Each structure stands twice: as C-alpha cells, then as structure tokens.
Amino acid sequence: MKRTKLVVYSRDQHQVSRDDMDPDAVRVLYRLHKNGHIAYLVGGGVRDLLLDRKPKDYDISTDAHPNRIKKLFRNAFLIGRRFRLAHIKFGEKIIETSTFRREPEVDKRAKGEFFHKHDNTFGTPEEDAHRRDFTINALFYNIADFSVIDYVGGLKDLQKRTIRCIGNPDIRFKEDPIRMLRAIRFAARMDFNIEPRTWRSLRRNAAEVITAAPPRLLEELYRFFGYSAGSASFAWLKRSLVMGVLFPELTAFIKARRGRAAEFEALLKAIDEGGDPYAPPKAELIFAVLLYGMFEVRCAEHIERGDHAGHEVVRELLEPLMPRLRIPRRIGDRLVHILDAQRRFDEQPGERRFSRERFMAQETFVDALDFYAIRTAAGQGDPATLEDWREWVKKDPPPEHAPRPTRRRRSGQRRRRGPRNDEAEE
Image (cartoon, rainbow, N blue to C red; front, side):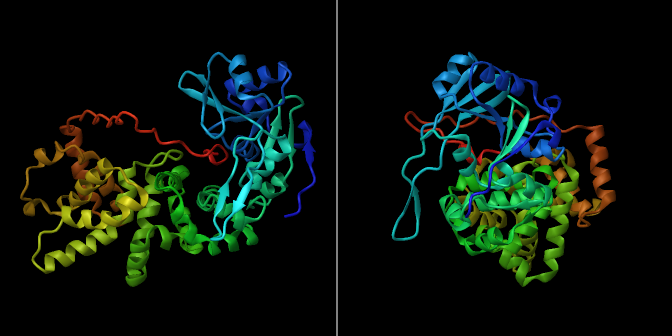
C-alpha cells in the first residue's frame, strides 16, 4: 500500500477541543509537553472527538521512554512484557501512556503464518501511526499546537464513514485475526462502511478468526453489544462469513429453520433497546439471546420423546461453545438456570406447579426475569405476564445474593494478559 502524504490540520480546520477532553488526560499531555517531550492524544479518543462522540478511553503516545514517564508521574505504574506501557492512575481512572513504536519485524513461515520477531522497538510518530489497525484509529492530536496529525488519510476516511485497513489487509488480519472482529464492531457501532479491499480480505480470511486466543474472542463478543450495536454487529458477522466460524451451530440452525432467523433478529434488537446505551449487557443475557431459539426447539424435541428437558439441553448447547470461547463456568451455570426458568414464566397461573416465592428467591431469578422482558419486547413473551411478575417483585423484592468469590490463582499461575496495546478498546 502506497504511503499517504502527511497532512497536518491546524486548530481552525478541525473540531477537537481540550474543553471536551478528560481534564486528567489534558494534564498528562501538558506535563509531558512542558518537560520537552512530544505528547499526542491518539487512537479512538481522537476519532470519537472528531465524530462529536464522548470517548470511553483516552490514550496518549509520546517520545518519552517508559522509565522517564514513571519519573514524571508518581501515579504511573509500568505494565507489559513485550512492550512496557505506563498506566497513570487518577483514582479509578487510568490514562494509558505509551512510547511511540514501530511495526515489529514479521517472519512469514512456510505455512503462511505470521510471527512477530520483535515487538518492543521504539519508533517515530509516523512509524507508530502505520503500525495501527485502521486509518480512523491512527489520528493524533498534538497538544503543542492543537493540530490533528494524519499520516494515513484517516480524516478523509472518517468523513467518508469508511473502515480501511492500514497496509496489506491480508497480512494485517493474519498477524492478528481479532482485527477482523474490530473492523466489524466499528462498522456496526458507528454505522460505517468497510472499504472494498479490506472487506474482500476479511471475507477471504474469515476462517482465521478461530485461531485467535479464546479469551480475546469472548471479549470481542461482549463488545459487539456495547453502544446498542448487537443487532448490527451480527448482521455484519453474517455477511462477512465470520458468524459461521464462531457460531457454526447457530448458523446451521437459522439456515435450516428460516422462520427462526426473524425471531433471533428480534431478540438482538430487543437486547439492544433494553439496556445501557453504552455498556454491554450481562454476559448471561447475551448468551441467552444467542442460544434461546435452539434451546426452545431442542426442549420441544425432548418433550415429544418423553424425555426431561431443561438443564441438560442448555449444557448440550454450551458444550461446543465453552472451549471455543473459554466461557467461564460461572456464566455457563447461571445460563442453565436462566434459560430453564423461562418455562415457568410461560406457564399460566392455573398450570403452575411451583412456589412463586421459592422461585423468586433463586440467585438467577432477576436475570431470568430480565431475559423474559427481552423476549417480551421481541414479541416472544406475554406483556401481561411480565407486568404480573414485576408487580410481585415490587411487593416482595427477591433477596440480594452476595457475589461469589473469585477463584484465586494457584501459586505460579500467570495472570491472563490484557489486549495488545495497539488493539486496546478504542
């Protein structure tokens, strides 16, 4: 890919303002600048400010090396093995600050796999821009003169609402298959298009997605539902062929039962509309949406055969998913009860053979009722029944359950590393 000519947009040519930034991020930028260092706001923060959106995170890049950053900020903590980063803490808030680095050397082996030989080489601002994933995420805001610096044509792509890979997309996607999911997430969340070359490569390399680390796949799945973008994300996943790689069972189910596709899409829209407009819903509710159609059909088949249906059906559906996405067992166990509880909501008052009070005392009751509300919003539940249960909750609130303690790591067991710095949430 031919390198784009550097363009610097002066303050009167863009809308990014310090007044719209987190004041602690501005403090970090100014302290670096006043101590003789280049200091840029980078990545998704610049992109969102240019789109008149409130950034979720503020990341900073500088020519100061990690140990220098630590000396300048007493509240800085260095993290990372391959490449040291500074987390500058302001209470619970973290301003991630990294040193400019260049694209790592890549070794293409006989099997077509790509390996990073080195990933801790400092670089220039231009080299740092070209190692990022998409042009819209490679824009820099310079605190020294309030300009926006564009090495890759990112501002034009932002204006055209286009996701474009930096460099050869085939190489970039094979280096890190998660970039394909990020392209889909950005397109869905911001209602952007994916430019043709990047799109063709994404479809061509869709099968590579499954080679990514399962915890990172799971994290991206949750992020699809942030900003109420679950429905749009799955529309992109289907068109890109990635859905068939990550969720082959669900894809086959929808293909075999055409009528179920509309019901699945209705559940996706309902979960988008019913929660926090920015934060993803609970993991249990996401998986309930993904599995409910298959669960309902499998239960009906078990009942026709005279078998007991419920917990066993959910565990059957989770069996291939648990290792593929490394779903925590705690979430799987809760999902079993949430889906099995739906039949209780569907029973008419005269048919109930259970204690309402004991049912409401269950640890998963509130989440089960939340999922029934999603089903009702999707036209798959009874509004009067939902209102009846909500009235019972008002009269006799279910008990609060203490969160389960997290499992401690064994001695010598490593903590799971977070996302790559260039792939951090933006």
